[in-house]
Image (tube, rainbow, N blue to C red):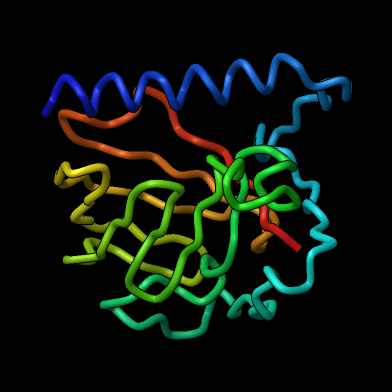
Length: 168
């Protein structure tokens, strides 16, 4: 089971890196504040669009047991995750108050370690393809909800953070 998840994690990272290498867009210039792109991915399919959620101000109180509203919604690793058919949107992550949904897996939030308006770290119980595992996941949006960085921690975690763009 551990070998399967490691293989799955490495396959996902390879897919993301491979798709990124195929991009015809020039690399953005590095910035001092973040190396995460800030472009919002447009989604023409209105049937798949979640209503946008306004990001709370940094000073607003954040519920201690849920994912903050600024991090909720649909996020894609590549543009096709937001605009393509569901059967090929393998990098799509849908975030709700207590759950992360992926192409073939679901992760339920079991314990919030820390939360603020633009970030949350917590333990998630994952299940998918007949397997179950637990990871600590940190979700952060360094730019007010345009992009999100996901960093998993644990024995079966992906080796590098994953960078998502908000689906419009």
